[in-house]
Image 1 (cartoon, rainbow, N blue to C red):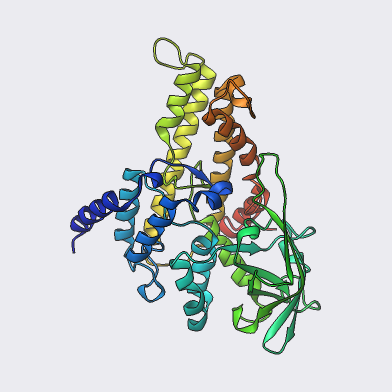
Image 2 (image 1 turned 60 degrees about the horizontal axis):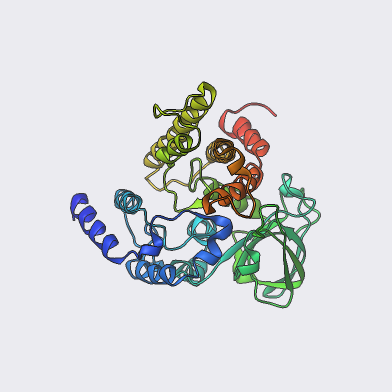
Length: 394
């Protein structure tokens, strides 16, 4: 089938099958759990599962679509044109799935990947600890081998979505006597067991997507050890590279925004600070809006170019830290700019006199203060870029 024929058939299928409630939406990752419980979201998921398009480029034997890079690009372009949200989102697709494809055994892939492509499970990440954030390798959560299982004790923090997760991919210390980057193992943990306790952390934005997770003799099966025992640091770094090579741009953490909304920011500026001539009279604000739009577009085009260069299937590398650093900075700056353009209307929390969009803008501004911290702080990303990309000395 030619790409043009594939495009026509894809467009027709999307128009006929994507429910109205899954179009023209922008869902922040903090709100994604509730959003994807809607009837339209469930119907959209069922239809995309049948096509294999929950994970369109994954192998067919695991429930993926088996699409080529070019075919997937067409699919994403047509979904963007229709303003259709993805049928599923989360760490299963963006993080642990690609990691299992690279590091998992065939048995592990068969056990976990089909459940992800059928949109049946939710995953969370067990990396950070109260005393091990930026210095992740100093983690202290212990896993002790006990026959065909590991007994886990310790605590994780900032475990996004843990209160709704079925499984966690977790880093544990399996050899306390080894140097801190050694003796770490990467394993998968069933969250639905008595030894796991999850406590959501309320945020200033009004939501609680992040959680504390406590392990008291929790159990992970030895068959769910990914990679070699005590060699989990290598797997952990690769997973972070998959995370950082995911959705990029000024709204990298908003599910469904496959490209920056170039016109939306310009229209916002005109609506709130535009003059009768149809432009933003304040030179400083006009320059800020233009700069933000240009940087968002440059980020989008750069991400696209890198994706095209790596279409051979090569795993992402340290260069993904550039996307994380630039994308998170653009996201934070963009939210702040949108709030400032609205003036006092961009500071409303509740009550009369504010539209729903204005109230959400305030929450987005508060939420996006954190994007330069979670997923690896900007300072960590700059260190990685200096060492791994530019080759500078320590």
